[in-house]
Image (cartoon, rainbow, N blue to C red; front, side):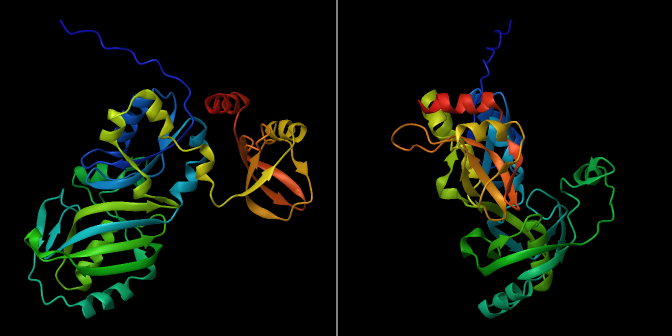
Length: 323
């Protein structure tokens, strides 16, 4: 007889957990583990990392899920090891070897030249092993069935790209890639294209996301560390919902206007036009503690126009965790 499974009592949890995703887990598997550890009733992530990738994975809980899209669109920084002379079916170490080629001399000057070639706005053909949808199915589903789907090249931006020889102890010719890129950039495709530019082909041997938006890997907690914490420490690891809005200009409303704003009504004031506003309620307490986040907005012609709003129960739950 199997012992009955303990039912986890879910609860409202609001905030952002910066997870250093471990190797071998999908983003959703990592999310579900953290959701279980926090006993959270609502959660989502801000863009996937492949199972073979590690690094920064912001996980949003409760009210924070309303702003997760902002970090889907954020620039990201990756570190990767690109193995030269070997192409695989997936463009990374998970696939089967489909081609081997000799690797010529790889000099720092040649790497600098190739890095310049791939810096700026470039065009990429999304890989078949990706989550892009075609007719309601992810491309990787077609790939697993051996079906090749025609894909259109897309423009992405490589803000900065550094290439250097990788340590010789990995047993093959490889280069280290560090790239700061726009949303929609596939690093495995970038690695493959760099391999073609070097005349030898390549695939990603490892991939680590070290930053997404303003979040860096040094701020992250590992899954094993989270598992070792007690419940209070886990909750203390959460960043506030407002941490998802670092580029938003704050506007504070008094209690009367805050209530009307939360009901979806526009408010008038002497504010300059602005596209990204974080709206807060009145400061609480004599120490001037910032008021609760109410939501996002934009300002046009002196009107504060509501965007994504927190609900009154969410705001009350967040206030209760402060005390």
